[in-house]
Length: 347
Ligand code: NAP
Ligand code: ZN
Image 1 (cartoon, rainbow, N blue to C red):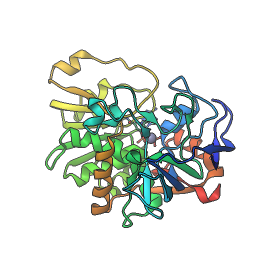
Image 2 (tube, protein in one colour):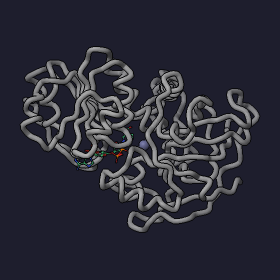
Image 3 (cartoon, rainbow, N blue to C red):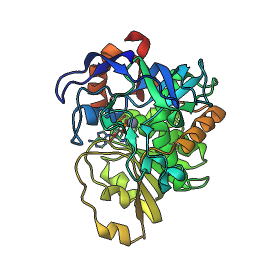
């Protein structure tokens, strides 16, 4: 077994604390990675605090992992020691069903294996995430990172990046379209960067007036305060696509009404409560709602290569691992510009 240091949650209420455990010995198709940086996603908070139910403890969160390969199993062909690599939200899937065969491992018919807070496919081990010194991952789920990208600022691409890139691509966002991004947090600020890079006219819809200048600096063309009901009304039937990244319970109908005919509401934020929805807002303009979960491995690699080509990374605040509990509190207050990234050298 490979010893690893980490920060873990022991239950839903106690602050995260130092934790020691072991990673498995390498199988033939495994890659061993020394973790350098790990982004902090709002999904980490949802799961640490058991907001979705079924959380397993002790839990080492973290699924925006960047590191360096230190060792490889006998059958690994795509990686060697010293390579810069990333690991995202999943570390395994059945790899044989129709969805896996179409490079949609995240929609595996048997269920993907999450990077943490998930049972490994051996049925006994609990997967542990990236707030740790080392990780061992099946080759298929490891991604190449270009040396052109700053490794700390690239870490959030592994979740916030792909989770916004994939639905915007699926919706066919292109030049000339009006796109709104709701919620300027980790996911939202990546959504703005991608939609702008695809040529769209981009509006940030936010609850935080203080974020207007940042929204423009990130490339957004307009800023709409969702608490300003008059301004919201003026934007009725205005957008072709709206990407909703909000982490807290909120009203979706309000955003549906802002969609033009055949507009698409892309839902990626995961509040715990089931929303109520007006069917009238849907049918009166043949609008649709599309949910999307991260992206497959092939598309994640495509996104990382696109980011290297276009020089797109996340705006980050690098923190020592000891700051993690304070970072969670700040994220809940929407006080993050725009992603915390843990420097694991501080473990
Ligand atoms: P984050 O950095 O905390 O950003 C969330 C943003 O939502 C905040 O910055 C804030 O933006 C807005 N917000 C917060 N509370 C609000 C409220 N009460 N009403 C309206 N807006 C509010 O979170 P994140 O890491 O980007 O994650 C966002 C959500 O996506 C989470 O629920 C997460 O679990 C989910 N997620 C989904 C996937 C997927 O595969 N679908 C992947 C990763 C994460 P403003 O200040 O601009 O209003
Ligand atoms: Zn995430």
